[in-house]
Image (cartoon, rainbow, N blue to C red; front, side, top):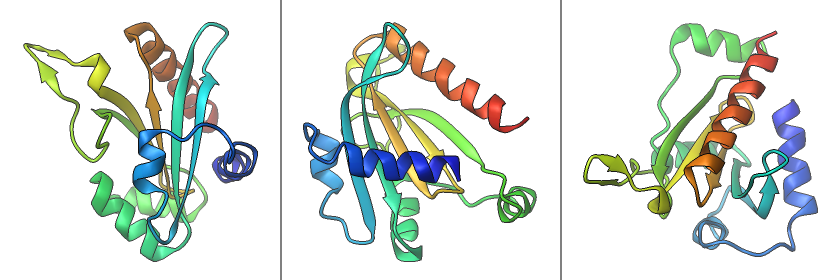
Length: 153
């Protein structure tokens, strides 16, 4: 429920903010709502761009699962979801196409061409965090882990 409230707040409060490339890519997709926030404060020193894509219905969720490579849940995870417990996953992905893995240059992830994608199964939403530095990405991961730990209590 907390994720749903966050999505609603982002969709309504930030509808007029700058539109990112990802927003433009997904805004016309039927059965999903898209919001984009430029300069979202992750912590006291880090700001990143965030795009949220949320399913409006089962068709939208089915499309999102295909588009972003979202796996089906195990029976245990599905039962937890039915009881109201969220399943949240996040991974480094391609900034231009979060359905693809993060690009590698040499032996390292290309920071400029990557993003972090978080998935909330309960709210059926994808959060795409785009940053400019590894420190900002570290702040994103720290924030996501704290949220997951807080929810598990």
